[in-house]
Image (cartoon, rainbow, N blue to C red; front, side, top):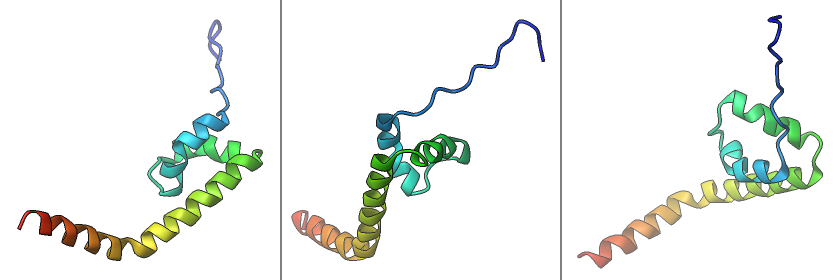
Length: 82
């Protein structure tokens, strides 16, 4: 170890930090090193785990209905410009 240099650990994530990143975490948009502190926080935070469960549920509903919603959006969008 280099004398005079101290390894400073990363600060732990707060609930606010985790909630800000939860959508990206649930949809696998984060790199593994970005996900690790979120997983560590989730391991000890019931409130954030509950929020994650809700994100997972909503993401599932959106993906289930996306083809239909996209079709409705694009047909409505095209009508405006005909």
